[in-house]
Image 1 (cartoon, rainbow, N blue to C red):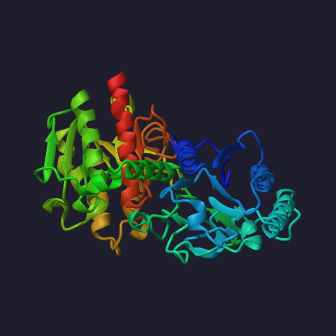
Image 2: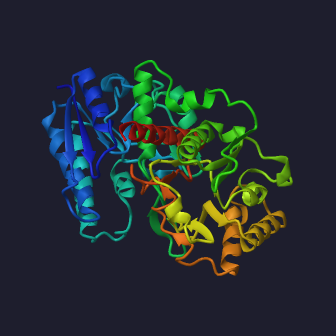
Image 3: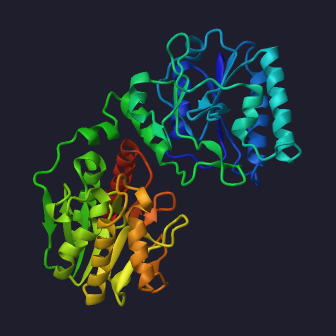
Length: 461
């Protein structure tokens, strides 16, 4: 075999990932092996296992042959041949997108030469000392360990032949996602990035990481291979529905309100389809605005939440705001068990907040009208509304109002899984699924995939 492609897995991969790696190997006549360490227990031992497995495989290919190591974050995007891509290169690992001193270890390219084998042995020795915590800086991540032996190449820098080896699809400060289809890297990845943070300057990975970005890349690579539009592109180019508003079942006891603007219409349309389907199934009301309404006093986006709630609260017994990055996943589940006996309803946040304003419900009572008026007033007087998260965003003001009335208690706050499950914890049985903190193309593609699961669940039920 001219080359070998090991797939190293420390967690269960997303559907289609191993098949993506295997299909690439078959295309070029490479050997493919799955090296799984899910049976290995401990925070560092799976990393130790991975590099010993790489050390095992490299000498077993032909002298001068190439080893392309991929993991659960890496997707073969443009399946070009290895020798053509890496001619004259003996070892290559790309850097994180935001730190050229740290490796993106989702892809490692090694040539079977005596020099590379010795460097790999040194890396294995380094990892072994790290695994038993006898390095001087034993808190550094795998990304730093590899960089000691194989200095990383900036991920945005093409090879001399114009090829991009491994491009990270997204990261907190921005994203290559929209340009990946233009540069067509051999590998596109969505790996957690590491950095130092906090008063103690400790190493920490991406917070709230989940694998939906990898699934999006698998789906996109499959679509491109089939000559089709990737889901994110199709969603962004789809025509907008007619009209600025949608009002379903206006006299219902329980109702939802929401807004999405043209900036986020690629995923707002998915939210609309999901909640329209849910509300028509159970007879719930649904008031959707496809642009911020004039009665919101010039506020933009999520800052207009309480004003839309104020507009419709008197029309229903119980009203719930729901963000446009939420779908109703298991549509057989009803709202009555959640709202029964409650004056207000909100989900616990999955991070450090004790409530999340992505779903906020209030009963049509004088006290709850006063709460909504209070939030409207606070937001109108906010010193900074320049971005969705300025001053903690609208969530700060909802939390202020709930806290002032003693409503952040078990009687009103339900667990994050019952009402508003973030996608990193969601399952097919989740009531609502929330897709926070992602760039618009990724969010749209993820919501699309989960909405297809919801439709399949309906069809099967």
